[in-house]
Image (cartoon, rainbow, N blue to C red):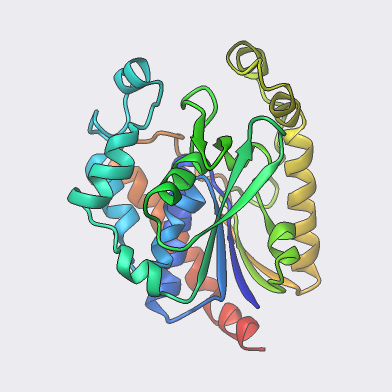
Length: 281
């Protein structure tokens, strides 16, 4: 089966948005897709068949205090305001096409981190309504910037804490021909998290999650090594920036968002024929 794997990275996700828009523009389809954090919240537009949407609403609202602000973090515990991001925005201001999402045969999964077990959880979203939208929220709920999301008996936070690049997980689901979208360049090496001390203060009741965060750089670097080896063997195609995108995690400058998006488009267009041939084999 043909799969699409999308790493997160907050506003580096504009790169991913550019990549998937090129896929949609060129009729590239997959049997399944899996997204982590921004790879989920922006990547879901490939199933709802809405090219341009992720760039459009981020350029329009990133400076809007209702969307993302310190005041929201202080008042609600969430830097990205939950009601605005997961209700007002998709239901009123820039409507998400739930009907197309539900009818599109591509299966769509998000990754979230189980605070209790410290393990990743993979959830298929079939219609993106109700509790499924909570899973989307959970996948992108960055530690220290978000409250723990409680849904379906789980306590969840950002999927990138436990499985930033879920290629192996997708392969285990039966997806054996995968395109992987990364938001860091090939030579990137993740270092230990400098915020562990603060995380221990706020997430101390979740020791297994903290252990996962302490080891995250090791796991991430192992994952990129695995992806690179698979790419070298011709078993996957990787699309990633040639160099660091240099964009802030909560970048609000629309020109910077556009630049990052266009980098994704360029990277995808450079490999579009290779992707087409790879998926057709």
